Image (cartoon, rainbow over all chains, first blue to last red; front, side, top):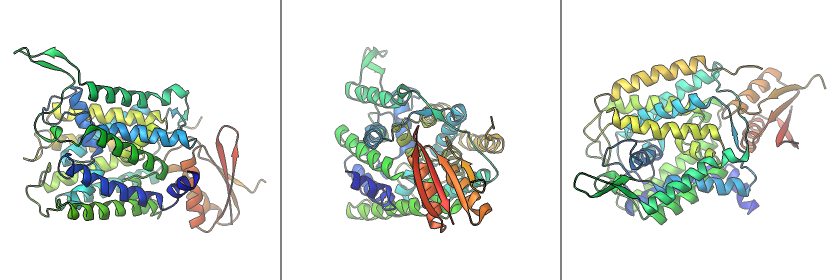
Length: 367
Length: 73
């Protein structure tokens, strides 16, 4: 086991993780997940927000077991290799805000970095604008890092704090299994408090046990290998370190080949699944997301894996993502296949302005 | 011992520990640098960067899961 762990923490780790995600995500599409959305960390958090009625967009409501698996798989890895280390105190409130703004941007594009790469590997060329925006956002974030941006130091925390997110995930697992329907609608039909889509992307999912197993497996691998779809680009530009980037390249190549093999590669700009074609706001949305992820220290997947290690600050970022997804739909900021929503562009503009203020003002306070 | 430059990167998250290490390596040029981190991820990131930059890396674990990384060139 320790030889396997050493292998995963070597420069091969991100590549193995990338290959695993790249193969399993298209397989999840084959088994029922939405098109080019085998795994989308932001979309899946948005679906969870909907299932909990934090928004009422009826087509995107489901408690995605992949997300539960990510956290619990990372927890198992962290406990197995003495890396479960509860900690917090590094500007948690700012991290909550960054989680919200990252989701505002990602839901204008309609996908997180994971899905941007998956859309590309499925032949959705509109993803290129999102990926270019992501790189630009990461570039802006690197500029702030070079000029001294820091969210400050965390501190060790009681063990109990580290168990908060895993406990929430176990609760979500119970809720997706039981799907309680305590309420009654006007016609007397059972409804809520948990809502699952009957049409649209939220209704499309693989079997619960398969989604959970894939999530656990990826969560375990990614905790060991530090797989990060934003850190890959950041470290390559900032530190000339490419080992995470090789993981993302392996991810895209594996997803492309798997999509080809499964007959899921459909090249083009038009009529792509759960995508919109507005170049400017596909780009702009991901500039905001890329900047927010970079300021917070990693992609949405990485934030989930960190919560499995007991990182309370990453937990605040995840909470920000779920709440932000609720706002995104309630305030007509999230795009639809028809294009950007009424307040999507203004949300991106305001989000960028606030993230720039965060980048300029947050510094480590010497004590 | 006074020639050793110390960088305290404890509690800092990605990518700050390797950034601080790189800054110190550039500033020192040749000599000895001590870097303190408190996570295995930071330990890996700093030591990988230093090795790739041609520095000799040794490590020791201190009480409280603090890792002391010594870079020499």
